[in-house]
Length: 201
Image (tube, rainbow, N blue to C red; front, side, top):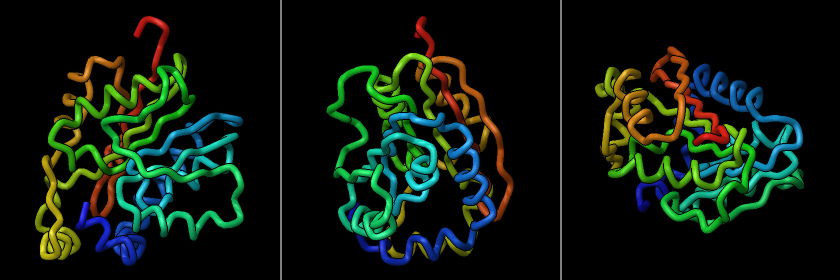
């Protein structure tokens, strides 16, 4: 967490290096958010995906474990009234089962030692018929990129470097339902995964 507190001030600048991919992620998130939805965004960073969802959602809870990231996110949402902010741990949401229409966890699962546990917790708070949106950068093929090298110099560490097939397999192993993925190519590619919760799950 100390790393993310340190880089919060320049996080958006770093993401701009991968801007085309990030714009596609935001576009897909906005499209997959139903109008009037109740949304939870976990490990939201500076809130780009919260902002994308908020354009159609009734309400968005923007959460992160880093106070500095949330401070940057709040600054972006001064004029947007349907977003609230909370410090939360992705492994313990504190919400009842079946609370949200959409749950987002963007670019965080590769950082976790137990991503399956996090996915199951996010799925728990998702309503039947809801969507779990899990876009994650595929760093395995780009492990020597300048951006990742700079991040590592100041303390960045990932628990896993995925390729799309490996990422999808991890999500399937969570046992939460059918996993759909779409690869977004770019400077650092992203695999955008979607899991829909059915009554049977």
